[in-house]
Amino acid sequence: MITDRRTAAENPAMAAFSALTHARSPDIDAMLEALGRALQSMDEKTADYYNEFLDVNLGRTPAGDKWREILSFVTYFPGRGTVRETAYLEGKFEGKVEGKVEGKVEGKVEGRVEDRAELILRVLEKRGIGVPEDARQLISSCTDLDTLTLWFDRALTATSGEDLFAEEPGAGQAPA
Image 1: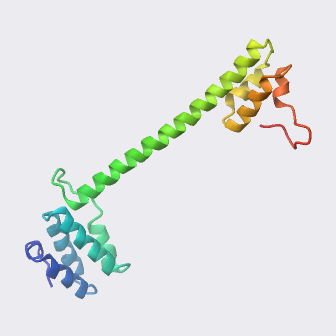
Image 2 (image 1 turned 30 degrees about the vertical axis):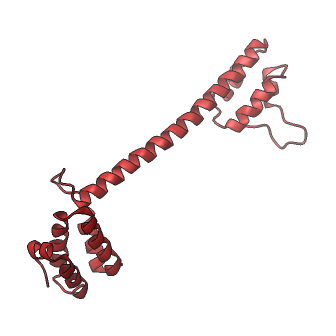
Image 3 (image 1 turned 180 degrees about the vertical axis):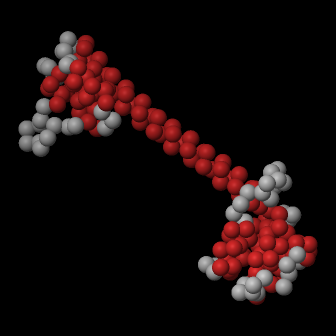
């Protein structure tokens, strides 16, 4: 059983094999912690290999859960390029990129919705058609682009503000 970091760092293959062999031992936590600390001083590729090797082979066992717990926290000594730190920072970066993309898409949709509502009101105004305040509120607060497109099309031929919300012949209800 290899339970000290230095021995694990000198022979990580033997330390990993030891952990697998003694996975049900009461000393498994000490073995896994020694190997986890040893991986911090190794190059990223080697550390990733042993991390994945143990993760797969220990599986969903108490030892496997302990292994994932050991490697899941972020080191309190940043800037050392440890496996955990690198994984954490990569995940954080990917999350930021994904958030920016989603934010841009949502922003574009919101912008199109606001623009469409303003255009409906502008067309009606330019055509000299009065729009009651409740209709103006309904148009301005609508967030469905398809409904706003329908109302825009109707605004081009409407004779009153209420024409926007009129039911189509054969349709169930006016858009809400």
